[in-house]
Amino acid sequence: MNVLLAMIPAFFWGTTYAVTQYTLPDWPPLLLGALRALPAGLILLAIRPSLPKRQEWSLLFRLGFINIAAFFSLIFVMALTLPSAISGVGMISVPVFAMLYQWLFHGRRPGLTQGFFGLVLIGLAWLLFNPNSISLNPIGLLAMLAAISCIIVGSGITKALGDRMHWWTVLTWQLIIGGVLLSVAASVHAWLAPQGYGNALSQLSQNNLVGIGWIILLNTVLGYIMYVWLLQRMSVVDFTFGGIANPVAGIVSGMVLLGESFTPHQYLLMLAMIAASLMPQIIGLIGERRRVAQTKIQ
Image (cartoon, rainbow, N blue to C red; front, side):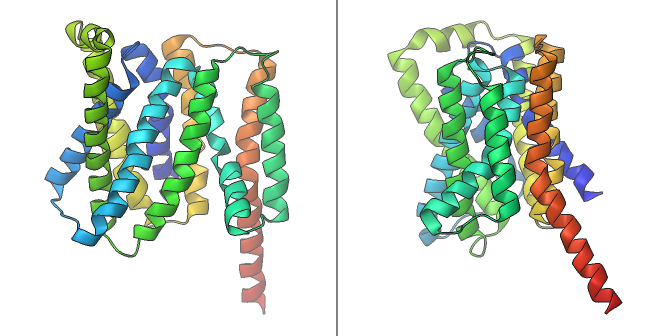
């Protein structure tokens, strides 16, 4: 049951790219990031008021900058420059980059299974993102790599705060701090390049409001509450299975909202990437169940 619940936030996150292109085209990424983060953080604060201790503010500031300000901006750059399906599928390569990061900076060598399927995933991504077969915006691809880096570094900081603060406080204040930083950055950018902001706000439509509401309430408030709540009640391995809804939502929402279409070969590569990202967890789960069964027999 928890795996099915885990698919809900993953699904909403996967729709971010298509919903943004469909309802908020040409809106500045900094403005979109601020609109996503700050209202969501204030809603969470109103639901359950909390205040960090003095020694916790520095870590929360770093977390808000990396996990929210930088990450949200990069996500919206991807949403406005890459096909929805490509963004959704590309982000499932996070475990591979995390594995390389742990190996290079912490000396933790990946297991044989992880290493093998990591190489498979890299090979499939190389084929899918090959410039000879598909034309992709290089700015969007760089934003994807930077967003993946934010996830990896931000996860380490979040883990460091895990034993010090309640998860709701961490979630609330990283959104508020990140939202404030994005609001300041958007204000400076609007002063330097006002046209994009003026066009977005002066032509505000019902379609825009639906997109903003979707991003704030479903993608962020509901998505992040379920994400953190579920991680307290299920293993990371089980939650990973729910994450399959993310790239699937990216592919489906891109087809439905934007009319995106790819060749059968490209769809096959996308499905293969999803399968390769899940295989280490599947093999690990099978091995764990065998060990448990053998222990019961003995």
